[in-house]
Image (tube, rainbow over all chains, first blue to last red; front, side, top):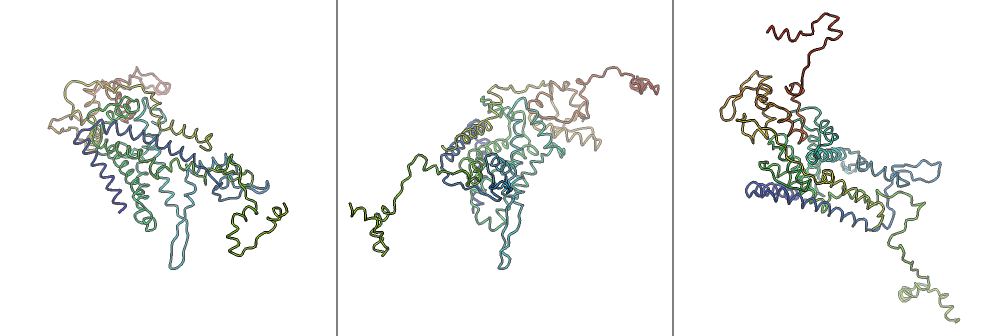
Amino acid sequence: MNVVAALVAVIGMVILVWLGVGVLKLYTLFGVIVPYAAFLTFVIGLVYRMVNWAKSPVPFKITTTCGQQKSLPWIKHSRLESPANNFEVVLRMALEVLAFRSLFRNLRADLRGRKLYYGSSKWLWLGAILFHWSFFIILIRHFRLFSYPVPDFIRMLDAVDSFFHIGLPHLYLTDVAILAGLTFLLLRRLVDAKVNYISHASDYFPLFLILGLVTSGMLMRYFLRVDITSVKELTMGLVTLHPKIPQGIGLVFFVHLFFISVLVAYFPFSKLVHMLGIFFSPTRNLPNDNRRVRHINPWWEGVPPKFLTYCEWQEKFKEQLESAGQPIDEDCYKDKKES
Amino acid sequence: MYNSDKVIPGIIIFVLFVTLPIWWNHGKTVAAPQPELPQGRCVESKEYMRSHHMQLLNQWRNMAIRDGMRVYTSSDGARFWIGLQNGCMKCHHDKSKFCDRCHQFAAVEPYCWNCHIPPETKKFGPPKATKLLKLFHVPVTLGDSQEGEE
């Protein structure tokens, strides 16, 4: 049911673009207004989320540790697994973001008969790294449509990505890799009963959306073909803030543009914010220096502590204590009697 | 806001990164490329050529080089000689004023010119007698004399 809802939403978008651009000819709406609105939603939404996260206090130091903490000088500590200072936190965070280190520790659990077995499972890591890195490289590569003159670095990336000169236009390796990664990530949710059980429409929707985005892009490059010069006129118009719609760009381009617009607009409201959320994860971004640095709960910063003495506490709960037959400390009343 | 010393630079880096295309071009417009179009008709319609010329050239290459087929029949029945230099370039004389304008704009680097030599960009001066040629008494005008014989 979740799968169907997500799939219908993505197919509905294609129909929407077909109606809007193909039939009603709303080029300005789909070529200028929707992309600008989506981009603004993306930036403002994500900045809002980040400020909101930064406003949330972290009451405890809850850093995740998987290694020896820094203690005595002759005990070797694990710099990555139990970072002792901010530099080591940055190192660990960089590896987490760039190499998905914690996902590499992914285990799978299987019931065989009545016994539960745990085993190493790198497939999720492989699928995730294929998908994320390909997506990132594809994003960078698209800069050739958003800059003029195009920087040499982008040209070089393009040449490396199409290194094998397969077909014409040359097949990009990242196109193959992202399809492989996405297919795995989707099949995993469909085939594995345990993952399927916890998958919502909001898990399938981004997968289908990105799959649609990649498919429409690949169709445009390898099969249906659009006039790249007109496309670049449109994209350059968008980024130089002088939008214009050249005539004669195929419908598939507007489908692609609408998919990416929906994707970026969907970012701040969905699980896709993990792109920035990772940097705000207290388990990842705090050094494990509990024994050297006192972590003061920000709630209590500047607030004088309120204490109750035992006698004050006893006075507060005297009735309950007496009814439960608890002994009452008579010393509390000595001073009062004497005075 | 807590940890604003780290969060605010982070937010600034994020915003700068996602708006990179905007400030990279700092709002200056780029004129659309205007390739010089010759008079007369092309092999196929203008719209088809704009989007599919690479596919057509690829098809032509396969027909000419692999099948030895040198005649192309276009969608409206007209016949054309298949060839880049003896076909396309007969009308589109100047690579730098036709091909390159759009290709540079879109940062496309077709590898046509790895084998073909664009006539107007490579100028061949008179051949020089190298030490090796002198050693074996090879006349430097060998190429010209052969052409003359033909």
